[in-house]
Length: 117
Image 1 (cartoon, rainbow, N blue to C red):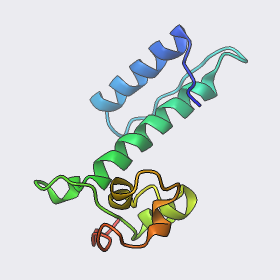
Image 2: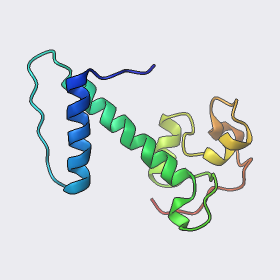
Image 3: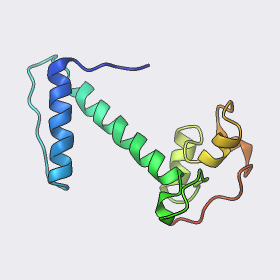
């Protein structure tokens, strides 16, 4: 299910994201009137950041040069796999994209990469 932000929400989200790039680690406050969609803005940003992290980490970006889909199943990746249907077992997803939970495919795409999370 995709949620499209309203114009004023979208402007706020873009300003927050650009502020995060300019001033990492800073605290930002958003003030909207009641029932104006503050939670939708924050949920959209968190979802986008999770998507960026998931894509970066599961395409072996931590290795630096050899970008290919990998399975990650240690540290917080282990927790994420159990919460979100094996989302960090991305190598398996590329081998069998129709599978609902790539974690249940075992090590089809090879053993998990030894990355300390």
